[in-house]
Length: 394
Ligand SMILES: *Cc1c(COP(=O)(O)O)cnc(C)c1O
Image 1: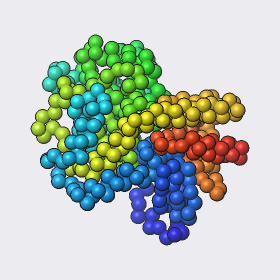
Image 2: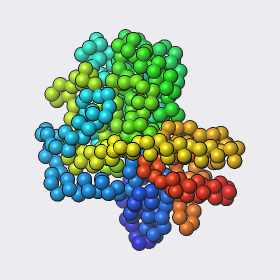
Image 3: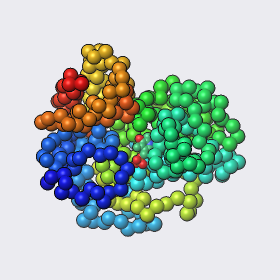
């Protein structure tokens, strides 16, 4: 179909979209309305952890859709229980609450911390977050985020989120007072430009929060579920946080997110938390398939190998072109450019013929790579060669 035949004018404007309509996808490839194909290193924003239309996810959705779609969150269902058990088995957490988006999971983490503060810390409610962080688009998670301009766009903000600087423990310590209940961070800032918290900083934060008897919350909506080469990024520094949120990759493309905590911290009482779709069997069945595939023997080793390969290829390119290197963990990486040509590269890569390439510039001076976790070495090679021709054409 021609682009003009799609009724896109009824969609509310929220951002500039190119005049194409994606019609199908498989693995690392997306196809548009003209039949053109694109090598996809965005993957729905690190959402399709196993690529487009993964067979296991399809099978789980099909089977569950024919069995039970939603009995109501007021009742147990089997996929919800099985996925929660799988997550607690493979993490340091004991309890799971499912949500439908990363922002909603983070809202849950904020509410759980404030509840814990009310119960055990004399009403403490402040959560220290970080400059350049991203925690979602609800009012509270926008207030928690350290994105430039977000303090005024829908003012007034939700109070109680003082900002520290990532990898600067003194900046955190300075903000701690009797009202502080938690510190919340992304172990790798994703939207901020793929900036990892150092292992040392993670360990210092854990010690500091323990010393002050406050909670450590990791927002692993982007860094979790295999993306960093371990099932969860907090494992890289050998610490155990009190609360973790998951989203994006956990559903393999469908809307699923989770709030996890240790048994001590899971202090919600009846009626404190809920949501109509939370823990519905259709989405949790997809999540069970995803986490089962990620924890299958050898899978995460493969992610680490391919992450290392992507890293070395990006470094090679950076040396060739005089760029500023690369950074990241596993298959969440950024190439640091020598100027603000990121958006131009993204546009040219998409428009390339015969095949396009989908990339993201999280900031104008860098390119972010978040391919499927089962991307092949061959596809990484294709991406690098396409990227080189885009750079040649600038
Ligand atoms: C994407 C993201 C969110 C928000 O998730 P949504 O599903 O878009 O609400 C929160 N935190 C981090 C770290 C993210 O990358």
